[in-house]
Picture 1 (spheres, rainbow, N blue to C red):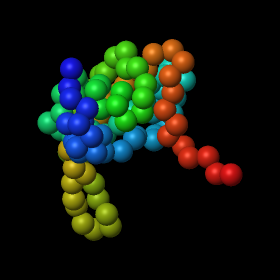
Picture 2 (cartoon, rainbow, N blue to C red; picture 1 turned 45 degrees about the vertical axis):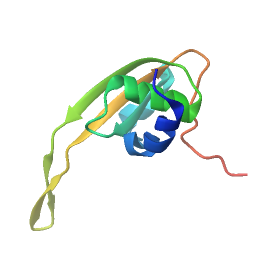
Picture 3 (tube, rainbow, N blue to C red; picture 1 turned 60 degrees about the vertical axis):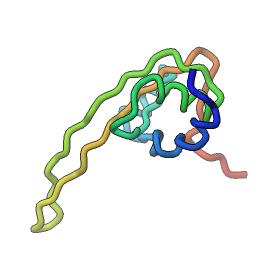
Picture 4 (cartoon, helix red, strand yellow; picture 1 turned 90 degrees about the vertical axis):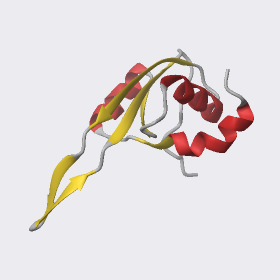
Amino acid sequence: MINSSYLNDISMNIIKYPIITDKATRLLANNQYSFVVSPKSDKPTIKATIEYLFNVKVVKINTAHLPKKKKRVGQYMGWKSHYKKAIVTLSEGDTINLFAEEN
């Protein structure tokens, strides 16, 4: 088990931001959420961080290292940077509110 004070210090360095694409939105129906995470983080650390930040129970985590890709902006060629993606499956009844509701 990972110490909660340790998680409090590094939680923002592990989970960078949620991925909101068409595929990630379809996965929400299966109670799966996608996040961009630190490339050096491992599955137990990601699981503990998600459970600590969102107060949910994580059942499964799938990770993928996505390669850098060439991108063109006008006449200039550049690179879209390498990142690591984590798809987190939550237990039944648990949800993460990714979209803020306005009153």
